[in-house]
Length: 159
Image 1: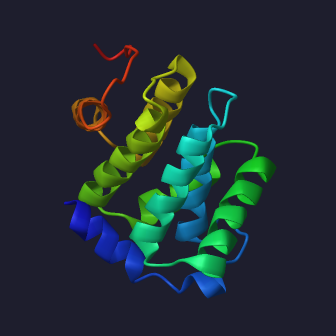
Image 2: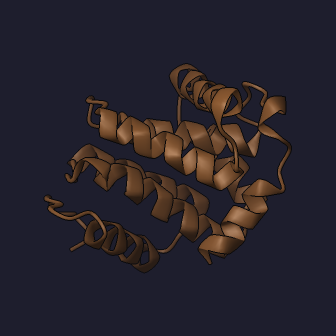
């Protein structure tokens, strides 16, 4: 499943062509990942590094291309009035399995610092609802990310 979403995302236009637009699925994904990273009001270095690793792995980019996509996502998130502009793009471009995998990526960023904050949990919940990921799939992705993040703390309203 994860390989399918990576394959789809790699087939999108090259990062050198990144437009700072919510209509670009790569920018929409970057903006949502950036948004969840900042949901608790504290951006830790470990979260920033995981954000950039996910972008690098997902799009097979590095260096200036990676920096451009990260910056485009940050700009788009800072200029957005809501999450719908981004989630509607992903819903149009990703199939159901890829949308589930994307929620898994969001949880990886949430747990990068080893903690689950209620605002992060709420953000992932809202994004999952907007892109059509079922509750049980969101919970399964959260549990998997939590299990892979030793020392993770926090509870979810899903339990």
